[in-house]
Length: 181
Image (cartoon, one colour):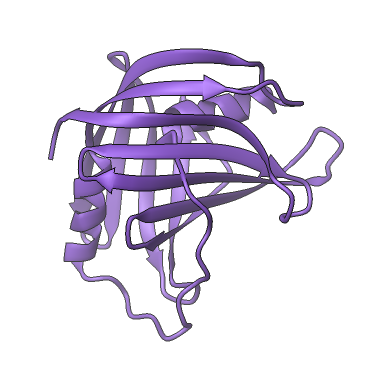
């Protein structure tokens, strides 16, 4: 569990902010320009300053690294390759789910599929939720939130919950965009 949480923090979005309610069921499929807007916000090379906290699944510590998200839109899919410190770490694929008014995010880390995530976007706030299970098979929810302060700066946090209500923060940080779209 510690490895999955850490990998998600490093590779995913290194993220920030509280969740938003889903859009109405009648949400239309996003136009390619909406995927392009997500791509413009998410893609590029980012300098990450991350602080992990001592929890049941993580150990306290600080790290700085550079992550590059090379993203392209093909039809109704946004595909992103994730490279950290020059090494390919994984891939993400974003597709629209009109029924929930959110995006489905499929992810592979090191060639291994990860549990899917749901992304909701409300203005400058992104909320990613992932349903997992702990070692004993009990439900465990993982959340990454991103708050865009500008097109080149984002703050994020990640955490877990056993009940979906009470959350334990495992990491917080910032990303500063240095290059890219």
